[in-house]
Image (tube, rainbow, N blue to C red; front, top):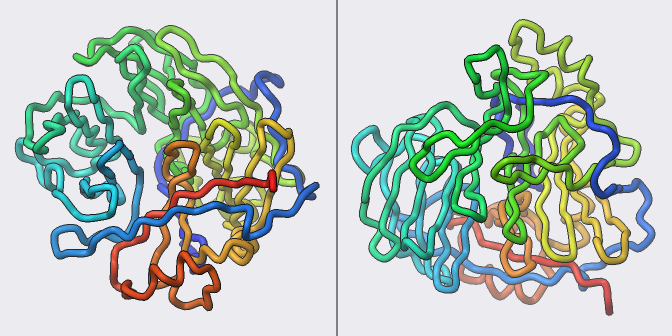
Length: 377
């Protein structure tokens, strides 16, 4: 796959699931081609955390981040889970790679239960859900799992599991969502499957959480859904200006007989994947189109206006060279990371970044970047 030297991609070539093209439901969100207001560097407010680099903590990319009042939990490219304090000092690795007790192969989803003081890690390849103590990270237990693509804990403690190929009910029906209790007992199925494949493209996690709600963002469907215990409800319908999603008919044609159509989609004129993150004020989008050209956009939910740029242009405006797409949200900041080796290739005028770079080498861990947009001034 083509490499992009500036805005670092986080793409998984995994199976895609799609559903019927919904009618225009939920709030309409337009990432228009022409910005009514252009962003300036001063509009992008940042906080940076240099993550300590040691032999034990070395990593090169972040899949997801969970931030608490005193700690940072980082899922390193679905390979290992690391804990740092809020200043970036390394604390410990949680679990380890392998097939034994307390070990994982593909730790894809991380969940923290502060009431039970427990960390749970869903291992997609190892097909198990592992639990560790939050205070000392020691292994507690694990549960065998079924096939899944992603998951999230609902506000009531139950778990919503998404599988792009569909969960088989045994009644010639497949659904994208299976809801279980914490013991993994099935509660029910949601969202009937009409197109499923074991191949596809995702530009980030297909499930995100905001304001105690769980949202499903299937990369080839323009409707963002809210998942509840017994229902799934449209929240947003996303539009991308002159860029368009592929039709269901086109996907069915190139994905017939479970063909691996990922590269055909990436190299097409269509949007091959997109990923949404959300704060109280903004929705952010990152998407690929026309052979892998990437865009980043923000929608102001209060002012009802959007900002959309090629990733190169956004990095030029902000000087955040080497910035990844958002991997999480914390306190109304989008959370991403910056690759030091990319950043150091450019002349940086931002005082906050220049002072940080003095003690960082090309080989150091990524810099955690929390950013938000403020256009009120």
